[in-house]
Length: 185
Image 1 (cartoon, rainbow, N blue to C red):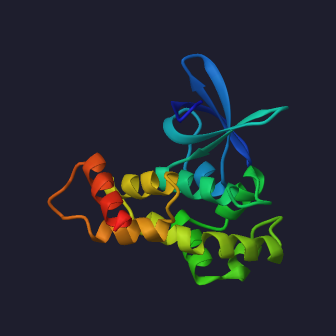
Image 2 (image 1 turned 90 degrees about the horizontal axis):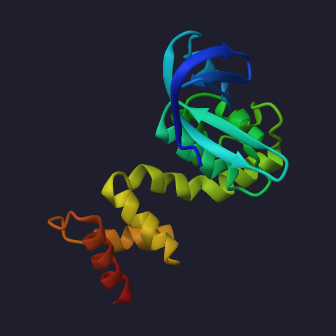
């Protein structure tokens, strides 16, 4: 799986860029706001979502890890594929899209090509609370929340348990352990 690409931009189109990485050309789909910040002939780094299907393998590129995380949350919503996710990200920056989702601004979401009211409502319904988690749980706490969620706890339970972990405990595994103790009480 490809996590990032650093290379020379050899071509730009309205939908994708071609990156030359040590002689191999990678076609990377990207949102217009990402593509406008790239220049042919210059080196760039993109965070990559490697989307593998039965009949294709597509790369989607983002300038920041935050944009990538938002994209991956969007495509986790049933009915939202990578093309729809890229369309939603064309509305503005990752922060603009997050604010639209958290405030339930359907007009902003439906302004993206191919996104109707039903999909916009579904995105707001499924992601409104999760995007708050992205903002609240940063750094080591983000890893703790992710670990607890992977163990079957809700993100709300994980955040609540984190409040009971002493500030002096900084190691991620120790924070997870303490949060689990808190959850078991």
